[in-house]
Length: 155
Image (cartoon, rainbow, N blue to C red; front, side, top):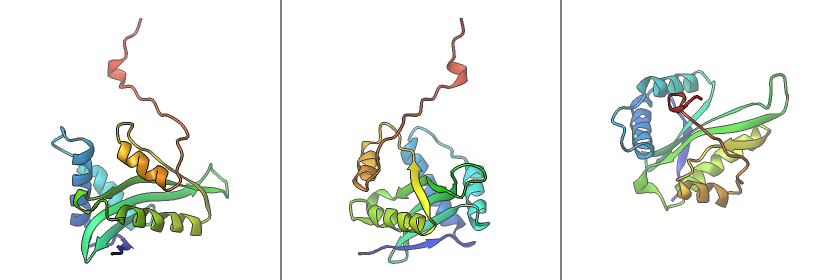
């Protein structure tokens, strides 16, 4: 079965909030509250055309979303790249090829907008996501290290 993909519209706020809540709960199971202001900001930017936020549907049921943006490689550059910020398929709809279909829609849009590359982040413990993206041709390029300043021990 094929998915239908479309940009969000002004009536999609509740659907998007529900999908993001499910996504964030999966990423951070111990967390009980999620940044609704952050989700609202993404939604507002997408409605204003400042980023691409697409919903994926199977038989009129929202099963996932992707949030991405195409931008210049550096200020003033005509060369562009794409950044995929968030990509999600609800757990009950995985392993049916819907994620691959959604990724292909995004990659085709990126190609049509003449971006030269695509970047995304995967959590190191998320082997399933790493395998998924590598199966589409993505390669590990660099590691990002993080430390909370409150954990810094001076001296």
